[in-house]
Every structure is written in C-alpha cells, then in structure tokens.
Image (cartoon, rainbow, N blue to C red; front, side, top):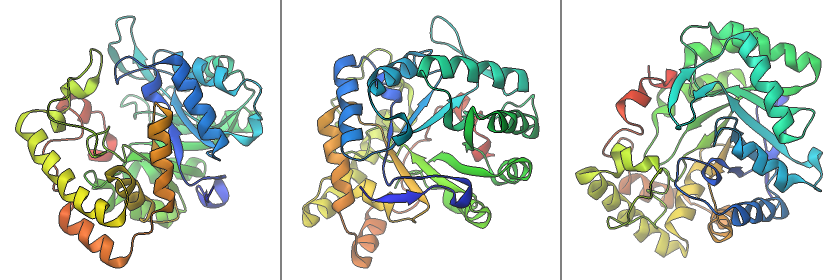
Length: 332
C-alpha cells in the first residue's frame, strides 16, 4: 500500500486511500452489517490504515460497527478519524451543530466507549458551530490532546479564515472536505491555504456519492432513507447533464483499461501527495475496484483529456440542498 504523510509533522503517515464508513450505517439507505464488516476487514488486509467515521452516523451505530470490525486487530495499525458535533433526534432529524467545549468533552467520552479505544487519532468538528468561536472548540480538543485521548486535530468543511484561526490555537493535521472532478471549490483558495500551513487534505465524495462512479443510471431507484433522493445533482435535468459528463469520462477510462470510478479516484490522487481520498465502499467488490485506482497512472495527456471531458464547474446542481449548503463554512 502506498503511504502518504497526512499533515506534515502535525499528522501521521497513512494509506494513500482511506475508507469512509458512513454509508455502512446511515444516509445511503439499508446496508448489510456482515458485508460492511467484511469490507472493513478487506480494507485492512489490503493495507488501508485510515478509517473515517462520525459519532452521528446512525447515532453511534457506525462507531459500534467499526469497534466490532477491529476486534482482534492491531489498534495501533489503524488511524481512526472521527467527526462530532452534529445534533440528531430519534427520527433521524438534524438539530444543528454543537462545538462548545463542554460538548467536545461529552461527545469524545461517548466515542471512546463506543469505539472501545483509549484514544482517537484525528478528532474534528463536523460543521462549524455558529454560536461558538472556533478557537474555543479547538482549545477544548487541544486539552484532550494533552490528556492523551486525542492524537491530532482536524477540521471539516471550513474556509480559509477558519483554518487560520484554528491553526493559530493548535496545529491542524488535516482538513476533510469534498473534492472530486465535479466538486472543485477547494481549488479556489482553501487548498492553497492548507499547503501554506502544512495541512493535509482528506477528500471525501471523490465519486460524488456514486454519481460519477460509472455505476449510477437514470433509472436507478433511490432507497428510503437515502439522502441522494434530495440531492440536486441526482434530480431531473441535473442528473441527465451529470451522467453525460460520466459518459465522456467513460471514453477516457476505457482507453486506459480502467473503470470510470478508478479514473475519478486516480484524478484526486494526482492532485498532490498531501491529499488522501476517502472511498465510501460498502461492499468488497466496490472496495476492490477503488483499490485498483492506485495502479492507474495518469499522464499529462490523460489529465488534459479529463479536464476537457469534465472541466471545473461542469456539474449541474449544488453538492447539497440549499439548507445543508448554508451550514458549510467552506462555501461562505
């Protein structure tokens, strides 16, 4: 497994691909528990060391699932990245974000128990709490670093100003943010800020939730509980437009002897050694396909062809519905 150093001296060396575990518990419709655990095992056996989760994925279900999958494994060989702060209710509704210092310590205590571990490798607020200065949130996590319960501090979906303010309180290891061929807002300013400060990037949504995987079709029914049913990019004329982009990408993939998903992942890998893509595979076959991206070598000509097929800003529709976009500090 190829390794990348996440966040310079402030971070860890991790696998060049990480496994995003959210879909095994929430937001993409029903998942198979046994297959999810088998997929985590297959990822670990293939050399993936970075597992990403959130304490609100399935209201703790995802952390418990990971704990079960890691039972009997070498904990020190795994880098656990955990997001916190999102408030949920029993019906799956969202109640805002809580980054107060007292909440940080509360969320962390519960995560440590659910994960069955004495420390979390990277801990990050999922979305900025508009009522709590980021300095206070980062300061509270820094206290947990001193106590040994957190190893590194990360950020999620924040803009350059927030990155700088957070980094001034405590070194930030990495920024987790959506980055794909059709979600390239990070290139406008945020990526430069991260590189200036030596902060790595863990890129989620590299296949845009399956939209540019090459497997999505206009006829596909969205399962109950799958938030893609409310995503602008998966709706109506937007879907037609976006799938046309995928077909343009498919021509390039076939010429390379690769799948569309592999080309899309390889493109994110090509953006810099400081970027670690997270793949949200829920099944072993999808994981195997994603791992194949590590063998894809994109030439200068390939990258130019990809840029012509899917130029920046080519996607139709926002990456989230408007109410969810309003919570993204990275989009302000």
